[in-house]
Image (cartoon, rainbow, N blue to C red):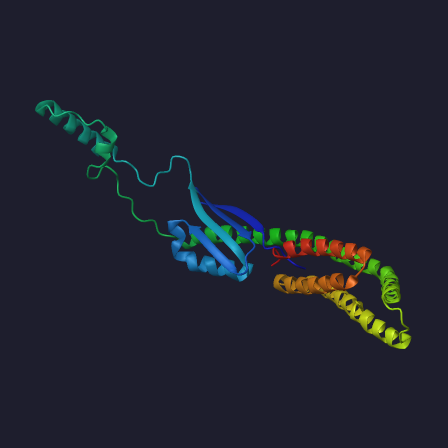
Length: 291
């Protein structure tokens, strides 16, 4: 069954007071276009993450985000209160003794002083935390893939409806074909009788009319269009990854419908052709979103 390229997935896991968020979105694209934003702690695993995503999603414009939410009160850069307090006392004392004005922005001044902010050792990624983060990545990708499948089912139903409509419209053309042929013959004979006062070779006229009518025959176009409709349905059932092929089939369907319209030479047939074009246009718009 076909799948959509549009999708969304999100998963949250927890590890030692952290919430690890993975979020992924997908839109239609001719190729695979992956952009990612990954928390610094997990950057060393970026290639592994990208490989996992690309191997599962095949095509689409993918936006992936992996970030950490820490518990309330957690601080990555703690302020050394004792040292800051000592700096404050000393600066205030110096200003009082020398007459130098006190700083207007006390906090800005104090936090720039040496050792005012405690040094934080670079955090290393443990195997246990990576397992939790990897689980979030896999969960988000899994949700997106399921989303794509559900969207694909909806597209499949819509395509089936449109293909059926085109087939029904094609069948509606047939009653007008014989009527059209008789009208063409009658129009040619009447034109000749009005413009020619001499006798003409009726056998030769019959041959010329047959040649002309054969040029307007749409039997082959109808048969090819019927084959394309059937092939479109079969391709949808073949599995995912059929988006480009369905697009090519829709183009071929358009050619046959256009040729039928140009050969119709009948108002009722042309109206039916316009309706077929409208149905096909809706297919072409949606097929761009098929994986």
